[in-house]
Amino acid sequence: TSRVRRLPHIVMYSPSQPQRTCAIANVGVRGMKPAALAKVLLDKYRIYTVAIDNEAAGVHGVRVTPNVYTTTAELDELVRALTQIKG
Image: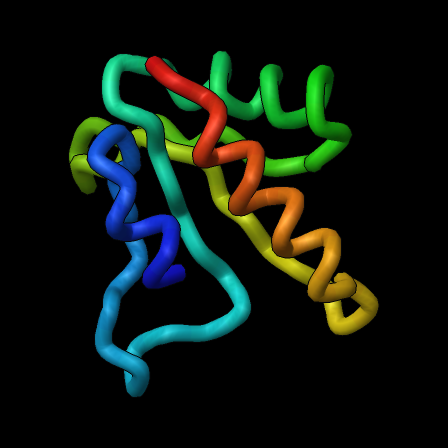
């Protein structure tokens, strides 16, 4: 997540403290609605996510939930996609 956190157009809603992290993350792209981000990730990159647009919590991104079978190459593809997508 540290590579993704450094991208200026990315908003990470997941905690950065190691003791508060787990296999679930929420990431957004500035200027892009969560549903649009989820659609681009699925249609262009074949990465399934769930759009979360919660005004009360102030979270507007997609939930990413890797499986135990998710490969490092697949996670690298997510990072590549997030690097390329602009809002």
